Length: 216
Image 1 (cartoon, rainbow, N blue to C red):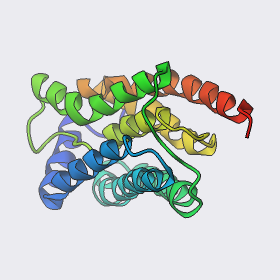
Image 2: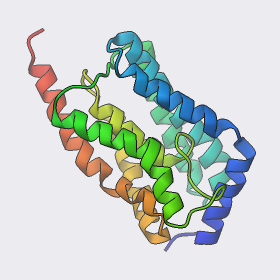
Image 3: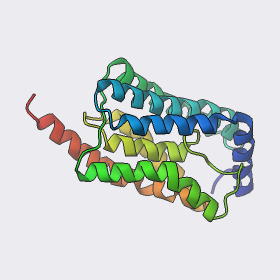
Image 4: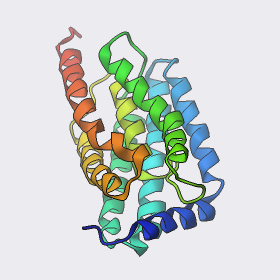
């Protein structure tokens, strides 16, 4: 049983989207920058992609969870802390230490990764509108937890360097928490989230192992 109703849940999104406008436009612009950087492989493009992900996790943790979702769910303060921790972890690994690089390759992980990225950017809002969600009472790419998590899994699948296991823990936790809530609340565009970690993590770990076995 959730500690809030579906009406309260959607009211939070409505208040949030109106309060932070035009952050939604900025989030989409940053998402497009991250996708474009995939086709400029290297450590600098890796820094740019990781910085985008870090900003999305930090913003969502502080603004959505901490300032808005907490009004109907006290557990949101804990979620906020986790999202901020993920954002800082990404910032440290990919921007400060430059240990993450990304590119599109001809393998299964890249195919699934591009599918997740395309889903988060394009299909996510379309499915929401088609299944009854209305602006502003709907989750939006880049500034709400579920599309941010799907987008993150997509980009992790496109990494050409090993993704540390500790960067996977919080997205997996949210895929289970947020995905389960989405099923209970009937948020159809978030249903993919529930299985996203189960699909992405084995591919990421297999790819990590292959990368570490490559001769230096």
